[in-house]
Image (cartoon, rainbow, N blue to C red; front, side, top):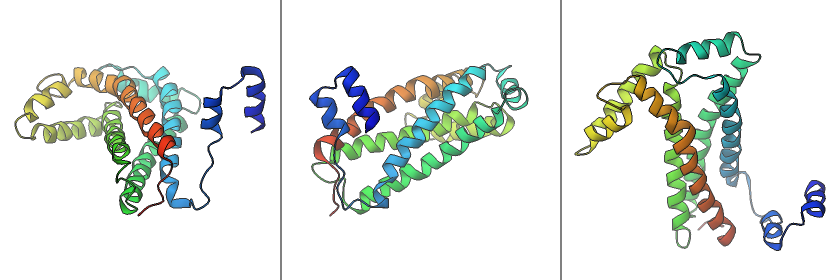
Length: 214
């Protein structure tokens, strides 16, 4: 709060800023209501480590794997940086799943918070999308064949499956074009979509407050 007070004297926060920053937390909140905040914290970790990883990564069919090797062998703390990104991604999937289970069990998805549930469901899909697109980026054998299996499953969707798989792959097979598309989705499209639905999610949360359950 001292830091916020210092910034306020220099930047003069408006009343709207103060209402956001000074929102009280209900006294009955327990640890089961922290999964959403933990997910958001892990998202920030992913953003910071991902930006650092992107400096050393080359999204090319011939250079992607080599750039990962250089990260491990030549970049100071490169292996640690990639490990933090990897494990934070796994923990993020766990936390967002627990968060949605808590919301469902306590009935917090009901009127008037149904739009917040929809926004959260989209964010859950985005989390899985981040994991799926990021898995291919090392461009090793495990990542390649996992993506082949994943896109084949996508292609099995009735009616639109083959067309959808072709769009995701950038062709009939998993190639360097697929790598480039996954890299674009992972670093550009998915973050933009996530930021938009996070704004909706937090906006509704601030307007309606935290649900006390059923």
